[in-house]
Amino acid sequence: MISLKKAEPNAAPLIIVADDDPPMRLLLVSALEADGYEVLGAADGREVIQLCEKHNPSLVLMDAIMPVIDGFDACRHLSHLAEEIRPLVLMITSLDDDASVEMAFNAGAYDFVTKPIQWAVLKQRVKRLLQMKAADWQVHSVAEQLRQSEARIRMVLNNILDGMVTLNHSWHIESINPAAERIFGVTKAEIFGKPIHSLIAADPINQQRLQAYIEDLKQQTNGDLITVDGLHKTGSVFPLELALSEASLGEETYYVGSLRDISQRQKEDQERQQLQKQLQQAQGSYRASLPENPQAS
Image (tube, one colour):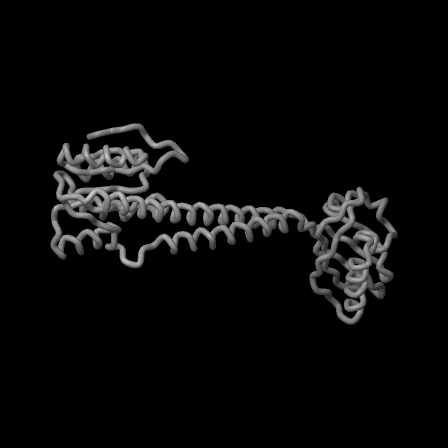
């Protein structure tokens, strides 16, 4: 087995060349190295499988007829690897009959060339397949980032403790819980007796939105969830989800409010949207890299 240096992250694409004929294997390795690729050589299908499991190549050039495990069976084995680490297979064979070609594709090969090799054709097909693999890797990479972003969003939502506030019939604050103290940077003593409006940014748009919400709530028991800008003790504003509902204790009417700082969630949502956009772009690049006819040069 010819074993060259292992490809490092972000280095040239790694290709495995498998042929039981040492002179042909050396020719293939030399030609691909001359084009700047990292190359590992194997003498049979079993070595191909072992190298793929160890080095995660982008592409495998494999002779169909080899000892121990032939190219067709090795290709079938590789086709069961996880999609994100599965190399593309270019079958190299002296068999040019239709049955062998069909067998190669059924085994999971993406393309084939026949011996004697036309080197210009081989290099173009290698280049095209590596472009496809790079685009495919980008799709999986962005998709994984998107999954991680969604996981972070779920974690944030699952761990946030909502602020709670109770208001008297004139919409003045009677009490707040510790989470609300943290959200607004105030103590119960500092906020007691102040109108609910004091927790909201002072600009007309936010104040009018809150007042309209209160007027609607007077006509019903529970209010819908609204988003306004909350006002921290420091003067900074932040996106705030607010929901109020009416309650009663004896003949006294009061209101209970749920308050949630959604700054982190909005940030995660923006990152998620950006990742979705990148994923769509990566998928478009991948589709654009696909040839209309896999057998075409």
